[in-house]
Image (tube, rainbow, N blue to C red; front, side, top):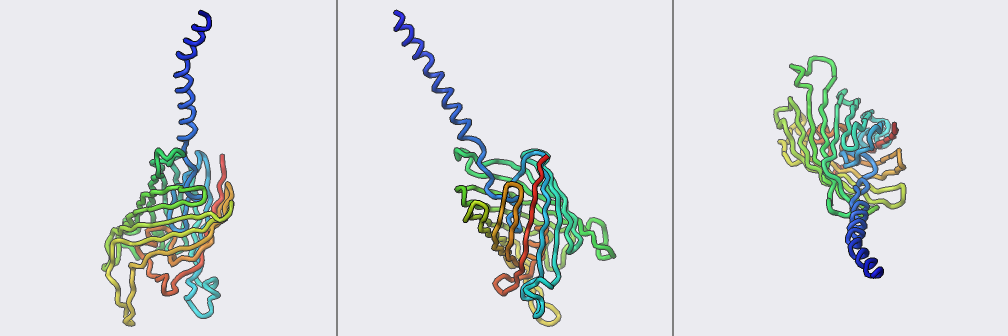
Length: 289
């Protein structure tokens, strides 16, 4: 009789033991996957990366002059440069806010990023989805603007990313740029889509690709000397990234001279395939509090 009681208790407890093990297994497997990218920026576009709460990111972005900008420019190093210095702070694991100032145009941008969906290790959720946006003020002095609102521009982007493996990640990011005031041949809004990827070639080194394609088309402009200016060229950026847990350095070539995204999408006239590209770098450093 005693043996029967032991067997009966074992059968009664077995489902609870199995269920407990399955729950424990699911809780481990279904944790969020690691971010698809190392840095919050993929050369010219934002990524899915959101830092832990109370993390401060300090960023410096630099663009030298165009390589074909002159005969005595030393590949653009002696030409006019563009620089942005920015800070961003993680108020929550899924919410980051920041501020940056850019040399060209004296642009002051207030930006934010929100994590909407996170890829899980079990692939039950196969994608990361994030929203990035900014509000930018052109702070140049003078009477170039009729009203204060003419200085304002906005940018909104939804980022779909996936970490296919520890070494390969990819993202697609549709966006809309808006300027309150534009030239007569432009529209106030421009839709665009960006494609970006990262391939790790060593534990600290990755190859980066960032491609930005305008969808809304603007008319070509005929200049006084008869030349044609085209505002519909895609942005093409190729580079390498060296990263650690709290630091990332990206070195690249790009035809985007601007750094604030709506400036790139709306006002770029450089043709990458015509040699209108430049050397740039991004440096980030994170501080945890």
